[in-house]
Length: 166
Image 1 (cartoon, rainbow, N blue to C red):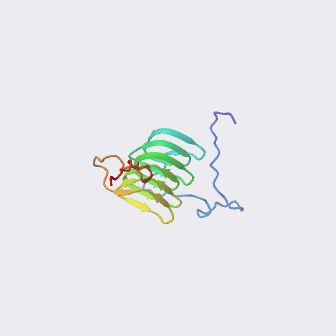
Image 2 (cartoon, rainbow, N blue to C red):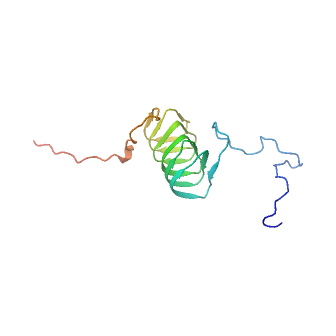
Image 3 (cartoon, one colour):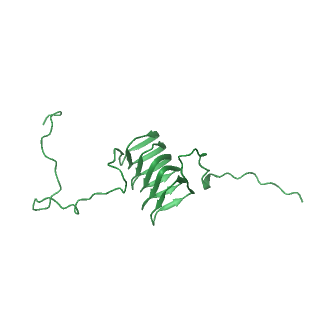
């Protein structure tokens, strides 16, 4: 077959040993509990990206990301993903590890085995049993102008201690 020739063969569907199509229960499919048509962009497993990321649609991260993420759309952090970023999106679903602050206009979901080390500002929050969330949460409508995040607990700096005269 030539490099640019269109492959006319039919897609291969999972099949049982006798050749009959596999039932849907046998096929491994992971569904993301989102009200979205489909994932439009994937930062795949084994990939690394650093910088400022803007996107439309639904972005799923399975690799490593460092930087800043901005969108009014949906961000899905996959189970094996490691994200270190300031996140400002419409909706975020965390199944992997996120280090940084999260602002979501619609909702934040942290699902097992997700881990979030940072602060959350969102009007709607779902935390599944068995996840790790180390930070603060402010449930507020963020469509209004708001001041930036408060510092994370581990980022607060102590001032010099004053000596008492006595």
